Length: 258
Length: 330
Image (cartoon, rainbow over all chains, first blue to last red):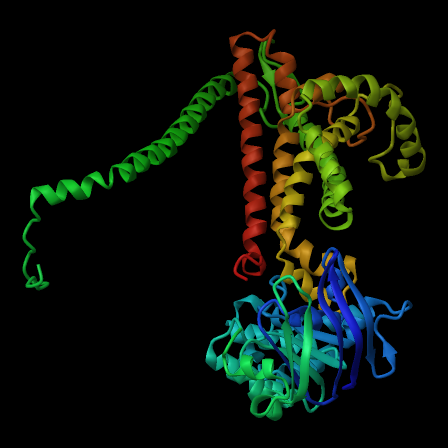
């Protein structure tokens, strides 16, 4: 259940290109931490190092430490597959399994972890769909394909799929950027509810969104194109948006660049 | 024009502007004519082939003294003429089933290896070699089958007979070289492997990255990613690929004619020499047949044509049945 993430001296590479450099920060449990910054500053890359998805990319490589409570995710004996079972992820574009029904989509993660009785599965699927505020919309068509839902519903289905396995952390990579404003609002409300139970990290390009949903905000920037991205500062969201301690943050937030 | 209301007919535009408008559409018209013409031409060719084959086949079948579907003999030159396609239909279907049973799993395995397992410097040459297999003419396969496969499969046949003989299918009742439907099936499997592999590989490579990441992010292993994302997405493509392969297996002529020692018997002992297929029978008999004998062979070819149509139709049904789950609307 909701764990603290402690990152120290983390760098990530694509082949010989260094995408992010020397990032250290702490992500508090049961809160929402937002990552903001201009395109190409490495915030998505950084997010993907937190569940070891970065190394799936050919040439992807990571240096440094990510502590989930007292376990180093990058310790030699740790299996990346096991990491991804405890650190869930929601992607930029809704990606339900197109060949699976709504029910099977939510149950997919559980089925990976072992066999469950039908009644247990039913309970978890209902709980997860309720948790994702989707139950009332889909309860009569659980055996219909997930790809038949609207974009916003699909994204909530993906959230239900991610929380069904009760992860310690939930990573969200611009979860609303492909959605209309109403669906976005639904997801933002949902994030507010989910932070009671999970540690949530969200990457967003939308600064109003960061201000609305997050408790703490981290600002990333890069000194020039081709240079690695760095963490500029991380603080209470209110402070970042009212009185940041670094000039670059203020410039970005007030729209002077990026 | 601004004063035109829906009730009154708009005045005809001046001739000059009409001509200007139509010159812009010449390309459209030419292209429409070309594509429509090609479509009609195809249908016309198909229809004339069907009429020709049907007419000649009907001529032969009306003179046939045996039952065309159940007779175990091919003697259109006899008096009275007796011929039937039972043996050919059986041999064609059985050898193709053997070929599919061997080729499809292997091809899917190779395609998955190339698309998802092999490092790039191995994947590219391997894909090239598999494609190269498709460029070998079928008569070469036939000669290789007759000179290499037939003698060297003797040991495998004995082994299958000894350990799997109780299944009836693998019971070898006749001593003799392996000029059997089983050998033909293996040869056909090798021949259809490249087409099934390369089409499957292309489909597997097109699985959207985000579908695979969805499985990865849930903590799926590489095999589980393939099972959850790649195979379901590629399912209809693999079926199409198999149908292309099956079409080739059903109609393969030279390789079968070179390997099989034909005889007009139906036997489920697939290791025993004998049997025949439509295409092999036509190739073997056409040269020495008279006009009537050729009509009889054409009639058998028509059955192969119908068989292929049925198989393709069935495949389309399978694909359409799960269309809403296909991922095409994702």
